[in-house]
Length: 308
Image 1 (cartoon, rainbow, N blue to C red):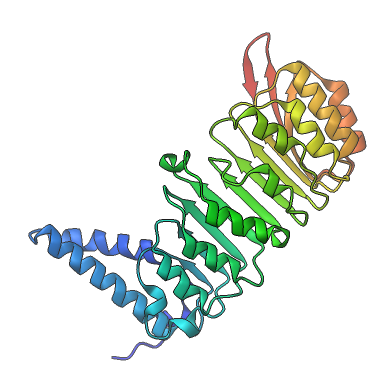
Image 2 (cartoon, helix red, strand yellow):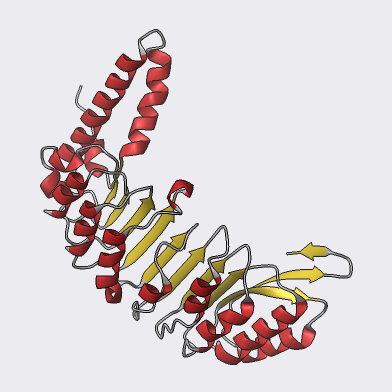
């Protein structure tokens, strides 16, 4: 019996890994007695056939979560991914798959990269041919923290002026010297598990980003004093400012006074309220008159309590 709706044709996101994981859960129940190699073969075969079905039935899939599956070589992939706008990938994917994808996908707007322990020339080539790339998210595996990715970093540097959104998760894989070149950047999120080297942080603090509207920095250790230039040189354009950190009372006062002085257009602000600093809080509310959301983390160091 023919289905009333052609459900695969409505597909807008293809997640190769999620498809494999769902198949794995089913196969683990239905083929419990099969040999491991045969089970793995069935899983990969079904994954390929499901992806081929989605590509064949879908006019256009704008979001692709890519793995080692040779998706660009499947029948109809050239047309299906011609308008690809968002790509999730990692550096362990073979170079030739990125080269194949680059032949037809030239208008990707967002790329989310998981960095593993190796560089990828194919991925750098894919980035280089993009005509509308605006958003870049870099996430790094622990084993890759000591690695360098010259091919990818060089092409990001070459196209630095095109980015309006940058997120760095877990590691500073893109150095401040390149962030400095991203003069059209509107969103900067740096969420690190550990503090970068002092010289790296000093360089980041001196970065001037005149178009920046959203700044979110989360570090386990941070010198707020070095953050002052980054905020002060922003020309008052910041609308969202979130710094995840546990400061001393002096650091809190210094930071909040900096914000009150240089960020009159804030709409979203997360800060600290330590030891009844009412004067500083009043100054922020007076000078930041566009505030819509204010998040206060309150500490009483005398009682060692924290309230959010």
